Image 1 (cartoon, rainbow, N blue to C red):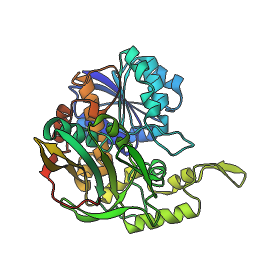
Image 2: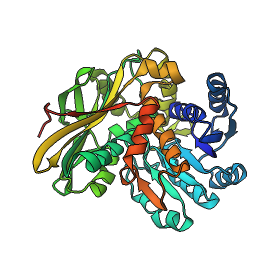
Image 3: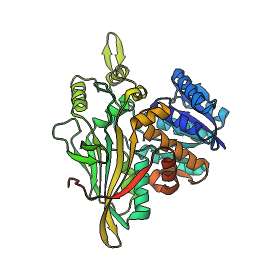
Length: 405
């Protein structure tokens, strides 16, 4: 049994904490830390009600490395699960290095002043973590995370060569709000207003952002939820999969958006509320996107009346025994069922369960190594078995549907 520190008490932090509490045979003691102590207190109360387990809580600024080091040296965890903001990743990685603690996150680093996420900043820690004899596991949510594990599983069991991967992320749920984001608004909006990229024939190809009229999209018929408009989007797991999946010639990421959502986002961008630079307002300096975040519903609060399902998976094209084949691996998660279990909507649930499972792989020494790892570099079988046993079952099917060229 081991100790774990969870940093971040939003919707995902809630799921991670409750799922860790459901496995006391692995997670003996849990410390939940956040800048907002009230959020920790609320989650601790839920854990006590659901699992009759007391957890430790502490207020912490994730960007204060000395304070983080002090916390880690005092509590002595075996691993830190980072579900804070992506631009805090390096601070937490530094603290883990100094304190001698394994590290795991769900989203890769991006600088505060530049909404461009890429792995180079965290991959640069490879030698430091290797020399310290520690593991740093990057992107262990659903996408990235489970989608990477699907790719590793397909490469290990289903294909001799994978030529093309299409990752499709559909949220067919309805939260009842005119406009809201399913995870941290600041990070969500920074992500989907970027120029789109996909990998094809050895290079990155750029296309317009999803809020532009000439963006690329098509209608895909998702299992159980039916046709949904799916937009080409850049997503971080493509960068690592290009590096680690042999023979890959093309990879794309698609996400569903409603017309209402995109219209709201276009208006917000046009009036300047998605800006990440400081502006002066009545003698104070504010960041418009941070102000917008304060106005929007807290993603952790969306689960109450959320209906519908998420469908996230990967379509693979390649060769097995000389024959061209296509396979579809996916998970379906129900918002209402997730809320019934852990008082969270499915987007938080599908991120939190894999984060717990990845930490379990490290603590049980199923995943072992020194350095920095993406999920597809690790054995997918025990990880995928664990998420299936903890609320995220997955399916493998032959694929015969339509994908754009």
